[in-house]
Length: 298
Length: 303
Image (cartoon, rainbow over all chains, first blue to last red; front, side, top):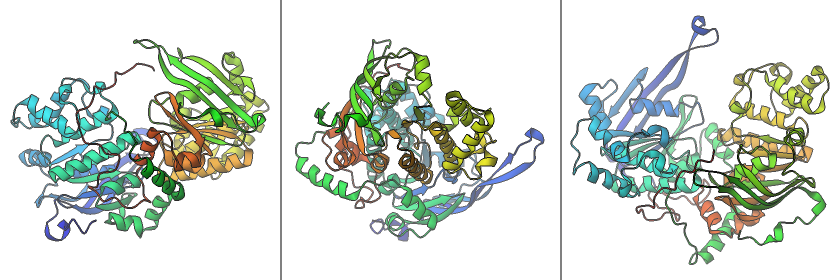
């Protein structure tokens, strides 16, 4: 499956992170007079994301995966290391350069409700990325936002609703639509499907895959769930305590994990008896013609 | 209710620890009363784990809270909940309080919000014991140390005097389990006990629960949205959606031959690591063509 990409050999990387490091200064006990200590959340992390590719960054809590995402999205300044985007060094980008970078790189967050302004209509939310950058809205606000709604499988008639009037899955679709507003080259999904119910999660993942097929952008997909990652990524990097312990093509990491930690992670995933599964699939094949699908999208 | 009532009565009536019959939980809302659980019927035998599985809003947690008598104010219940043959619905709160933490106890999803940050964990565990069994502080403290040891907290004699924030998330959940099991309850209700935990910690907690159940014979009601977790821990499974029971049978039957389309859809939706690799870009069988959706469901204020 990575063989079919072919992009890694010929195309230059879209994003290149080199020796990214983030240190936080914390105070232990003792209040303001307490001793300072330095915590390295991300420790010399290097990786590349190629065009049209999905790289998953997987790890448990405290592994530094979300901090890495924030550094790459330039929502946080790295202590050390460099970030190159489309061949340009953006590590210290400011002003116009940063605005251009934000046009190319968008983020979808875990909790759709806290990342959407509750007092803004969907139309305003979806056009905000262009408005903030002073860009013209092609075709007018209404048509532009309506088209985005359709792309993510929502009803364009609901443009004047507020986030609270949508379900969690629908709100996440709005978050995805907003990321697409500027026509990004890289979409960073920070646990974008983790908070969703399993049936909704499957649909949102299908949406993410379809959008990538249609528009050809890359994903940096941050997740704690290896099973989710397996369906969506071409390559995987496993993080632990701020360090990438293993990275490689998706199939290889799952079938021949090299690092003991990756093996521990894989072994910890609860599994359904394969025999039960086999019988269910056989049964499902018989039922296939009469199986009805639930009616509404999330 | 698509299941035949055949499984509802256990083969051995005397072995039933918990019998729930026609349980309905209703909340008054601005748009009139809403049933969050409708006509739910199931039994839990001694030494058995029954998994209640469903997505958010399915009524699985409300079912658990109804059994514990911990439903939010304003909720109305009807039907019957019999615990060791005694009806619980309609019993005075004081009586239920004597049962809770004693003969039946509960472990919640978020251990940090269930523990009091101002007291040491030892004090909190000992309090449960003294409240139901009395005895000296010193004896209760010994019990607490013992309980912490049993749930795998290293160096329990020293750590008994620490505060909740000094433990990791997994250890806090172990502490909650120690507290829930201190009076050796006949029934343990675990409501998404591993949902907030990392996957490696989750597997340890699941093992711990299974091991403790083997040792004590406690019946367990395990509530989760995660079908794979249910598959590893429960002997029987009850699937809920929108307050309704859709399927109720042996775990093997539900997973190998699900009868309800919703159960089938849920099983298809689980992201897997052991099936044939679906390459990115291959749309799963559950995918449907994108199309404009119906209006969002109205937000009911039930909390």
